[in-house]
Image 1 (tube, rainbow, N blue to C red):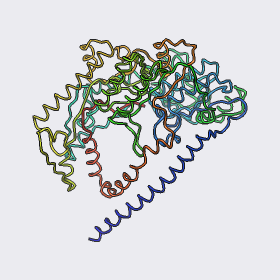
Image 2 (image 1 turned 90 degrees about the vertical axis):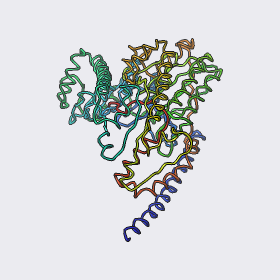
Image 3 (image 1 turned 90 degrees about the horizontal axis):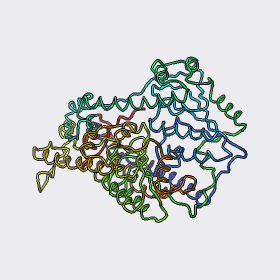
Image 4 (image 1 turned 180 degrees about the vertical axis):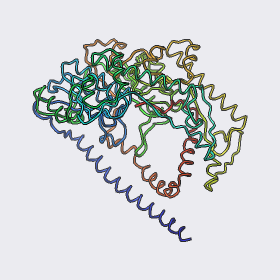
Length: 596
């Protein structure tokens, strides 16, 4: 009894403390948002330092593909697309004399590395140097080196190592764990390469899963090695031998020609300053913050930029408190429609970075792309780290599709199902008893009951319809015979390079290339200046916070009430399984096993 009252009052204290902390946090956040909004409204900006500068780009920080719509965006480093666009602007800024890059020690998303590599190469082509410094390539992934292999000079800290020897991924398989907990996975997959559910149903790779994963890993590795070889002026076979023969000490890496100089970042910075004849280094984030606002672009043709990252969901897709960005079917389709209706917009660029999500929301966005094309607005897709499954669905009807060679795309298939956790919850004394009226299918999504034979057959038929719709959409959008799409679909993930060979992607390139492609389709000459306009406009921190606030305190209180229960490992596992099982509807998602 004593323990009961200790737990009872402890839970009450937890709720009170959690609520107080939430209120305090909210006060500070609101103050910060208001201060930021006021500062932006008054146009208060720190001025640029006098004289010429060198920009510093730190790739050791985790970066999103696109700017987030979260109210906390001001705390984030620039996204990949923002770096690409800022470096493009810096190419023609006479005050920017060079770039120094802090290389990632442990690797990064392959397509992110590729797109940044391309941006640095373009900056070099403008006649300005790019110097990279690494405090070691300590992780085994080649992607950190891939991003900077084309730099004018590569510095390596002399006490660090060069351990980038390949590319890997790890897939968790919970089949055995679920069996121990009494959780029964029930999924429908179309077809053998649609591997996202394997993490719940299997204890190891299936033959198809292993084949597809090794295939896209090999394609990414080949791209990275060929690119680094061209950058360093050696044969591809020689670069491959160097990489697989690692790891190396710093001195050995220099002797092998993998890096140029040894030393600390202070030495690399000074070398960059001396080479450029300047005295100031400015982070790329400070450069953006201090740059004067762009003058209103009048009488210029407009290219609409519509960005989406994260899972595809129905509705607006606004992130919750601390949540990740989402692609809302309502929001993205409305943005596409607004751009199509705007008479000043000549073409639309759709930047996609997603592993998929809701089939219904994906089809809604697909319809908006088709309508934009019917309205006479060319649509060009730029694929980021991934544009797979639902991400490929919304890309398929575009006039042109650009992908990085290392983008993960395809995954043309579908899966859906549930986790039956009734037995698992019973083991911790929790019983959820369903009741229903109406037809037998009413409990098809219940996590407490297994499918009946009739439910399973109906569910399979519905899933098959979704798969058939998906393949037909791809065949129509890509101008491919349906039989060919069905042959290369089956849920298989391809890299951008592989997808181009299959006709699923038109051209290899990043965001800048996609904008050039949009110019081409819109009949805008290469030397004519254009205005890139975001649809919808990026919200201010205060606007984003207003969209969010109101649910956070309630969520925090609920979390506090269940804190004691959540500490039990059995309950945490069961609730995680239940959360998965409650995602109803047909889903178009790819496996979460992107390499780094």
